[in-house]
Image 1 (cartoon, rainbow, N blue to C red):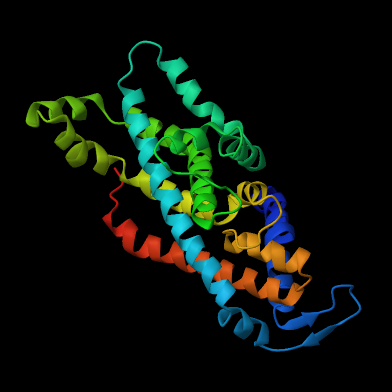
Image 2 (tube, rainbow, N blue to C red):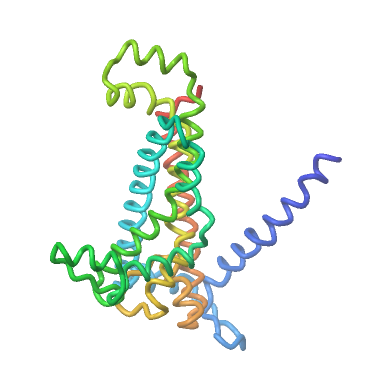
Length: 284
C-alpha cells in the first residue's frame, strides 16, 4: 500500500497536467468550437483534413523539421566539442565549466530577448559582424535571416544542458580505458571516435531525445520574442502555430487538431529512436 501512496502525487500531477488536457484536446479536435464558449458543432475529421491540406501548415511543418534538425545537431556538436576541451583543462576547470553552464539558468523568453538584441538592425553586434562580409541582416523582415537568428539563439540556449551531460559522461570513463586507448592508438582524433565516442553513446542517445523535444516545444518563448508577436510571413514552429490559431485566431478545434498531430508525431519519433538508434547503443 505504501508504494502506491508514494506514487499517488506523481500520478495525480501526470493526470491533471498531461492526460486530462490531452484527452480534452483530442475531443475538441473533432468539433468546431465557438470562441466565446456558446457551443460546439461536431465536424468529424474536417479539422484534420483542413490542416493537412493547408499550404501554410505544410510550410510551417517543413520549417519545424529544418529548425529541429539544426538546433539538435548543432547544439549537440558544439556541446560535445566544449566538453572534450573542458575535460582536458587542468587549471581553472571549475571556472571554465561554470562560464559555460550559466546560460542554462536563462529562461527561453530571456534568451529570445538576448537574441533580438544581438540581431537588432540598429545596434546588434551580430548584424554589424555579418555586414562586414556583405550580409545585411533584416530580422523580422527577411524569412531566412529570421530563421537564422532563431536557430542561433536556440542552439546557444541549449548548449549548456548538453555540455553538462557530455562532461559528466567523459569524466565517467575509466582512466585505465583511456590509458589503454592512448597506448593502442596514438592519434587523438582516431582515439576519440573509436573509444571515447562509443562510450558516450548512452549519453548521446538520451540527449538526442531531449534536444528534439526541446526544439519542438521549449523554443516557444524564443520564437515568440523574435517574431515580436507579428508572425506575418516570418518562420514559426508547429507549437507556435498552435498558439496562433487557438489563442489569436480563435480556431480552437483546428488548434486542438494540430496539438493531436504534434503529440502523435513526437510519440512516433521517440519510438523510431528507441527501435532503431538504441540498437546501436551499448550500455556498459
